[in-house]
Length: 161
Image (cartoon, rainbow, N blue to C red; front, side):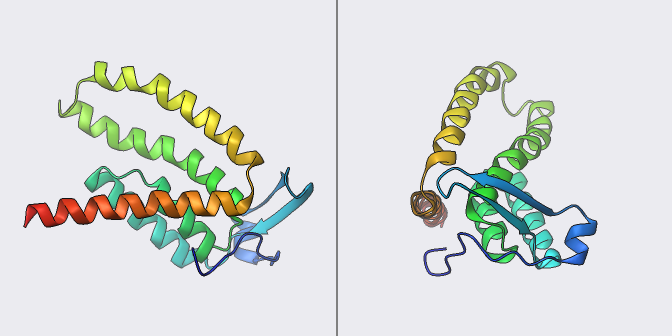
C-alpha cells in the first residue's frame, strides 16, 4: 500500500462484477464529487478475503486490517470505500467466530458485552473521522496499524520458539 497507491482507481466496468452487484459509488466529501467503482479481479479478491477470514477465525486477528489492502490493491476498490466495506464486513465475521468461542466457554459473555459499547462508540467516531480525512491520512493509518500488528505477531512468534 505504501508503493502501489490506488486511492481513486479509474472506473472500469466489469460484467461479472455488475451482475453480482459489486459496483458502487459514494460521495467523497473531501473531493466534493461522486466516486464510482466496480470490483476488479473477482476470483483473486474473493480468495484473499476467504484467507483473511480463515486467519481471523484461527488466530483471533481482526480481519479489517487485511481486508482494506486486499480490496484496494487486488480488487481496485477506492481506499475510502474499502475502509467502509471493511467496517461492515467486520461485524458479522467477528460475530460468527465469537459464537464459537462463547459456546466453548473460552470467554465469559459478561466480559464481551462490557467491551461492546466502547467498540461501538469508537467505530462511530472513527467512521465520522474517516469520512472527512484525506486519503493520505487513511493510507498511512492503515499502514501503521498493519505494521504494529505484524510486529506484534513477529514478537509473539519469536517468543514461542
